[in-house]
Every structure is written in structure tokens, then in C-alpha cells.
Image (cartoon, rainbow over all chains, first blue to last red; front, side, top):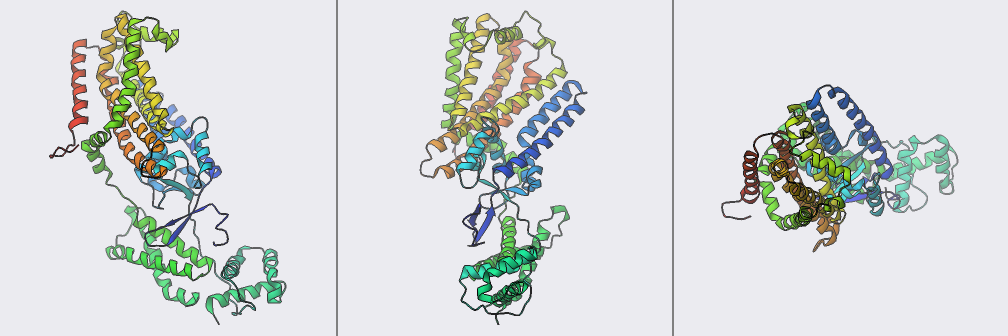
Amino acid sequence: MALTEEVDTTRQYEIPEGVLLEFRLAGPLVRASAWAIDAAIRAVLYIVIGLSFSYFGGVGVAIILIALFLIEWFYPVLFEVKNGATPGKKAMGIWVIHDNGTPVTVSASVIRNLLRAVDFMPVMYGFGLLSMLFNREFKRLGDLAAGTLVVYRDNYEERSELPSRTAERPGVELTESEQQAVLAFAERASGLSSERRVELAEILSEISGHNGERAVDGIYGYANWLIKGR
Amino acid sequence: MRQEQFEQAYRPLWDELGALLDEMELPRSKRNPDKARAAAFPTLYRQVCSHYALARSRRFSPALLEQLHHLVLRGHRRLYRQRGAWLWRTLDFIGGGFPRALRRHRGYFLLALTSFLLPALLLGLACYVDPDMIYSLMDEQQVAEMESMYDPAGSHPGRSEARSSETDFMMFGFYIFNNIGIGFRTFAGGMLLGVGSLFMLLFNGLVLGGVAGHLTRLGFHDTFWSFVSGHGAFELTAIVICGAAGLMLGHALLAPGQRKRIPALKAAAAEALKLVLGAALMLLAAAFVEAFWSSSTLDAAIKYGVAVLLWALVVFYLVFVGRSRHGSL
């Protein structure tokens, strides 16, 4: 976490309990993809509604027009308030939250979706894109006015376990960030190929005095020492 | 305390919070409301918050931090979410919230009204005096269409007598789609430093004034004025209100005052939204009146009478409804 703070597009928010929450912001590309999926869904809706009500004369036309109106302006509101995300956003793994990390409310969602009309100008979200590029939170104009963020949904699965080894104290004094690097490596190594694992572990060969798989085990040992002590 | 001891000591609490959140995140119908546990939630959540803070400051391992961060994130979403009694709030809004909000921001309303009415009157007068003036606004075909639509001698299908109830329904749908959409865009245009809203107000004022002046000069008063006067009470007022909401956004962006620009914009947008939603409801009413009443072929005198009532209703609603007994706003 600490190592990547400077390059990651994350945003921190201090909650009333005094701790920092981190949100990973969704950039223009992923949001455009989400929009494209929604646009496709809306197109299908338009066609289905258009075809099925075209046989009902004036009343049918009225229903079609009212449906067009509702879908154009309130399709995103409905889903954002219900699930935090439109189907497109959900498919892309992102959702809408308030600046303070809480689920988006009706009024904020309505503001950001009414102002979509300006974000869309002059063509294909021109102003929206400009606005996203000119502020550090990738907010389009509607997000600025509504106080909302579009962030990645935190998909937390099982916690990766540290491989258990005999604790071994490293031969040198490790700084805090070095300790974090050792721990991060040990916890995430199971997701790496064995070649990559060895390659990374051998960076510390000079200290551990080991090569190959034994170098990896050596770092596991340091990590165990850091967590469990002697 | 080493990380291992820390985890051993507190893991039961984390699991408890996790299980509680699993339960609370279910849809309400599937939830098993165990009151005691729900009451324990805030305390439990705050304990885990402090564990997270400790784990961070002690530089515990990234995987543990991530686990706790995720718990805190979920707890935060749950504890600080805003839930609305939306039906009650909607009724309260119609029964007073909306007119109060409008009166609070009457300065914007008056500015928007002037931006709409002044060009309408000026161009209306010009078109009434000068038969060619209308062509500075529309091309020949548009003028011809408009003239035939309101010509008392003609029997153009768009005109009142030829309209069936089917057409009424169709037009109802169209007015919702078109007019409320225009209202929303007039508001959204405020994001362009207010210029977009101002443009929509001026433009609509010019077109409406021009058409009214031109048709009156031609002597089509009864077909035109009896058609527009009824729903105009809702429609024109609502468009001006949408413009006022847009001007609020523009003002916050141009002159944020004591606040920073973005917080000022957020505050203005929250207030402006009340005006826009109220205006949208008025446009819905306008669509109904326009589709089912304005097109009727009743005597013009009756329609004017109803129009006067509708205007009085709108003015009364906006000026008096929702005032407290002590006369504030």
C-alpha cells in the first residue's frame, strides 16, 4: 500500500472514527466502457418498448414517449440508488459513492444524471472528459456538483495466508518500508509463478546467502519473524 | 504486541462484524432482524476501526490491513448511509418544501423571469407591428406551418377540432418527453457558468414572444391565446424556475463567495435540485392540461376563464403554500 501511494489513482477520506479509507478511482476509459454497455442495454429497451407498444395507437405512442423520457433521464438514477451502479458499471466492477464514501442518495444521483446533459456537450461527453482530466478525482461536471465519486468496487475475497516457516531474523536491520515489502512479498507470493518468485527473492541473496527456492523460503522466514517474533 | 498475538486477540470480533455485515447487507425482506446484534453494530464497528488504526500505525502486514480496511469500509457504508422516507418527503415537498425553496431563492427567479419576459415582450411587440419581423427568427416554412396551425379558418390536422382523444394521449406523452426534457436541459445549462440557462430563457422568450405577436397581428387571437393561456400557467412558470435553478449553479461557479468553488457548487446544486424537481412536477401538470384541456373546442371565453383560475392557482401555490404561521417565507 505505502509503496504505491504516489503512483496509484487512489483517494483517501478520513472517516469520523479517525481512520483513513482508500478508494480506487475509476478513470475515463473504464467509465466509458460502462457507459457503452448501458447504452446498448438502453438501445435494446428502446427497441423492445418501441415495437411492443406501436400497435396501440395514440396511447401506445404516449407510453413509448414517456418510457423514452424516463429511460433517458432516470435509468441511471434507478440503478444507482438501488445497487450503487447501473448494469454497465456493475459489469465493469465500479460504482457511485458520495465523496464521504457512503452509498449515493436519490438527490445526489438525480443531480449527477441531470447534469449529464452538459457533460455530453458539445459531442460525446466532451466537457465531461475535459472535467475528468482536469481534476484529480476523475469527476465529470455532474460529479462535481453532486459530490459523488465513481470508484472500483472493493472485491475482497479470502485473505491470502502467509506460508508458515521457522521464524528467522534477517541479518540486517530492515526499515519500515523494507519490512512491508518483505511481508507483501510473502503474502502475495502464492499468486506468482515459481520462476518469478525466485527471481524476486534472489534480489536479497546477498543478505540471505541463499539462491533458488531456498531464497524464497528465507524471505518467508523473515516474514514469519516479523509477524510472530522468535 | 506482535501481529500474531494481535490477530489472535481480536479475530473473533472481526468475524463477528463480518457476519453482522453479511446479514445487514441482505435485502430487507431476507434479513433476520436480531435486534440485539443490530444494536451492537456501532460499538463493534468502532472497535474494528481502532484495530485498523493500530494495525496501520504498527505496520502490520498488507493482507491484514486490507482485511481490516474492507471491514471498515463496509461498516462505514452501513452506518452512515442516508435512508429516506421518500413518500413522506415527496408529499412534504409538494405541500410546502418546493414553494418555500422557490421563495428562498426568489432573486434567481426574478432574474430568470426578466431574462424570459423582457425579450418576449420586446420581440412580441416588434412582431405585432412589423409583419416581416418574424422571419428574423424562423424560416418561411416554419412560419407557414405555425400560421396554418392556428388559423381559425383552416382545418389543419394539428388543430383543435380534428383532434381525437388518441391524439390527446399521444401529445401528452410528447409534452412529457419534450417539455420536461427542455426543463432539465435549461437547468443543466447553468453548469456552463449560467450561460446555457440564460440562453435557453432568452431563446424561448424570443420564440414565444415572436409567435404570439405575429399571430395576434394576424388576428388569430382566439385560437392561439385560448390554447396557450391555460397550460402556460404551469409550463412557462416551470421553465423560468428551471432557468432560475441553472442560474444558481452559474452564480456559485462565478462568485462562490465565502466558500471554495466546488463546495459552493455542491451547496447550490442541492438547493437548485428542489426547484428543478418542483418544476418537473409542474411540467407534468402542464402536459396534462395541454394535452387534454388546451386542445378542447370549447368556447374561448370558458377557456380564458379556466386559464385565469389556473394562473391564480399557480401564483397562490408558489406565494402562499408552506408559509409558517409566523409569516416567515
